[in-house]
Length: 352
Image (cartoon, rainbow, N blue to C red; front, side):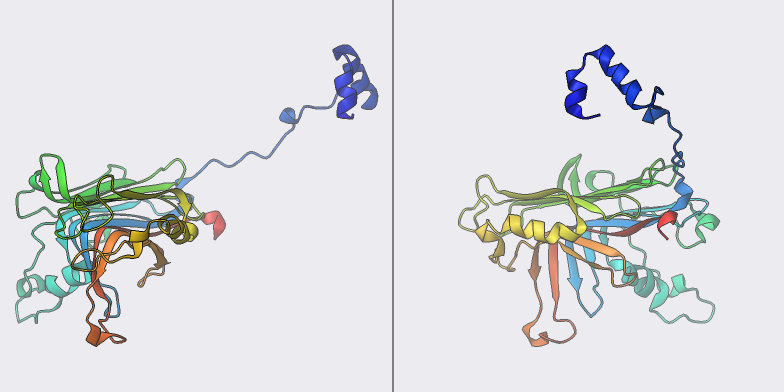
C-alpha cells in the first residue's frame, strides 16, 4: 500500500484496507518468521598469534635482518592455534633486551664452544639480569621451551620496575620495563597490556613508552599505541605521540608542545593518515638535536621472519648509519625513541 494512502486513513480504516489487500488474511510479522539461528561464538574456532613490544629507546641495525635492542623493555605475546586446548601467554618486563637471537641464541649458550662434560649453560652462562618473564602454561605443557625468570637486581619500583604477569586463563598479560620508576613516577620506560576476549575473540593491546631529558632535543617524549583486532578483519590502530621541549632555541616544541593522534585507523590507512596530519607541522621533517632526531611516521610491513602484518610506531628516531656503508650491509643503523611495535594475525576457522 502506498505510504500516502496509509497515512490518509484513520486507524480502523487502515486495518480494513490492509485486510482487503491481503485477501482477508493478516500478514505474519517478520519478527515471528522462522530464521536461521546464528551459531554461538566458540573461541576454539579462533586462532591468533599476536604480540606487542615497547621500549623507551630502541637501537636497531639492518644487517640485513633488522636487529632491535631495547632499553626499558616490555612485551606481551598471546598465541592460540585453532582448536588448541589452551592459549599461551608470554609476558616480559626488563631493563634491557638484546633481541631473541642474541639473548636466547648467541649469548645464552649458542655461541661458545661446548667442552666435554659441559652443557650449553656451562659454556655460556649469560642470563639477562634484568628480565622478569612469565610463561603460561609453563613446564611440559609449554613444550619445555621457556620458563619463568626473575631479575637478579632489585626491581620493586623504587628505582627500576621490571615485572610481568599472565592472566590465570592465559588470554591476557602485562609487562612493565621502567628503567627509572620513582615509586610510580615514570621517567624512562615502557609497558604493554594485552587481552583476547574469549567471548568474542577480539584482541586488544595497549603499549606505552616514555622518556624525558634527551639533551639537545626534547624534554619529554611519550607515545601510546592501541591495536584492536577482530578475527578475520583488518586491525585498527589508535595512537598518540606527544613532544615537549622547554627550549625554544632547539625546536618548535616549546610552550604547549605538539601531539599527533588517530583513533581506530585501519592499518592499511595508518601511514597516510599520520602523514596528512603531520604535514601541517613544518618541524616534523626537520632534524632536531645533535643526533639528527626526526619525527617518523608509523611503518606497516610484513615481519621479516613470519610474514605477519607488523606496525612500528616510533615517536622519534635518529639514523646513525655510516656514510661509508651507504648501499652496503649495515648502512641503516639508528635509534628510535618511545617506540612501540605490534605484529600478529587473528583468524576464524570459517575464513580458512
